[in-house]
Amino acid sequence: MLQTLTKNVRDWFRLPAPAPERENQLSPELLHRIKTIQVKTNYMVNDIMAGEYVSAFKGRGMEFSEVREYQPGDDVRLIDWNVTARMNQPFIKEFIEERELTLMLLVDVSSSGRFGSEQKMKNEIAAEVASILAFAAIKNNDKIGLIIFSDKIERHIPPKKGKGHIWNIIRTILSFKPEGKGTNLSLPLKYLLKIQKKKATTFLISDFQDENFEPQLKLARQRFDLIAINIIDPHEETLPDVGMVNLEDSETGKTLLVNTSDSEMLKKHKKICIKKRQERKTFFSSIGIDTIEIFTHKSLTDPIIKYFKFREKKH
Image (cartoon, rainbow, N blue to C red; front, side, top):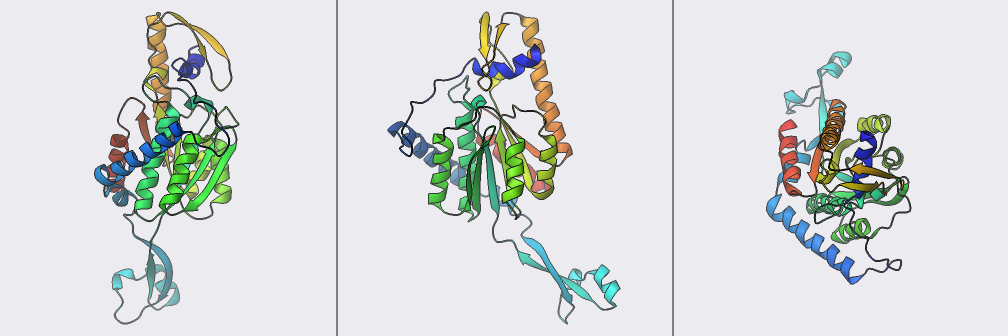
């Protein structure tokens, strides 16, 4: 029961869905939201996160290209001693400058994102987080791509540059109406491995309401620099005391009758939620994946800036 409650509680404070719109037409309300996010995230990137993105993701600067014979005047520190020993004459390593980065955003748009106990739903927070990362990347002339998923691949926007491209990504995330309701985290990882042949820094943005995606995660981590962003609402872990309530799972439609006045049950529920979240974070770390936890009722930028600083020191 408690494990079921962990999954189903997210719909208790679900906010009303936006009014339906005709395809390819944006309502004034949605257009205002898009512009607001654009202005807000652009400010965050320029005034709050200046330099942090570059330091975190541009630190290496050079990548290996090839080896060639040593010539007088070459830096002896670049000698490849293994090749030199095999060839019986000195060879040096050559490097080329990494001039651009490809950033891939994998954004979960399943029905569990339509939950919010504070001012915003989780899918709105996910859109703002994706926007912050996209603006930071485009400011440094990097390419940005997008994969939107639920229990199917909903939309793919190939990596490009430019402000118009960023506008398209933000608009797509905010206005997209998914066909699927559930969450399948293995699908976007498989799809990424199929379509993205070059290296890419990849942010997986989700509330991670899924199971058995770990094998695919390991495969994706072998090729890509993968970072998990976990969107969390406080009332998924801490239920308010409102008596007997029916909780509905937005992805399956199943309901569960819960007595929220049972303090012992609530304590156990919270303990299970926190333990599960910590175990996931520990597993991610064990296979080389960093985790950024973002709560819907707290600052969006603080966890991102903290991670950028951590990554700069790490590399």
